[in-house]
Image (spheres, helix red, strand yellow):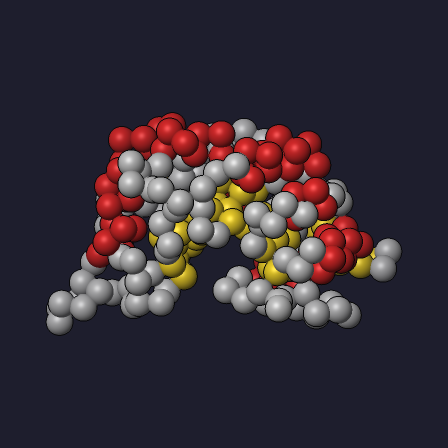
Length: 246
């Protein structure tokens, strides 16, 4: 389930070139570069039904800000209210991805401490250069759970030295979607999977992308099938993000 308290983003990285939010907004004649507060869903986690119960049930994993970036500057005036709702709903697990981990320290609440127990921070790094730029910062933040998104994957990304730190709880890999999607090569995915196995880090292959190469054969996959096709690899590549190998 997703919660987008604000919408729109500024491209800041090679992975943003074919951003799915920009693609979908163009179809709706919207400007994805305009960051706006989602007034109808801003308070989604604390909305209640006619019986007074929360509409978002306890135990939900709520993907947060998947059509923007949680730490983008334009949202600074709204973020404190979002943190208050996240703290109030300590029975919901909030998954927050970002490309702007460099802003983390100035954007967290004063009582963050070692991290809110119901918040997972995920950093996106689509290539080696961005991994080496963002992950050293990521290793040093305080968070009860940390995930790396290699998405959209643009090349094999060697995460070994970051996985060896013991700070990374899971890695999730995915290909690029929609028009002009750059290739996702299954060989890259398998190498990252092998690295995660070596360091006992949970791994998830969440989607093939629309332009998928496996065993030298290129497959053009419809977006609706990308997740299901990702589960059909010859090795076990899919697990829930709440699981971790023993």
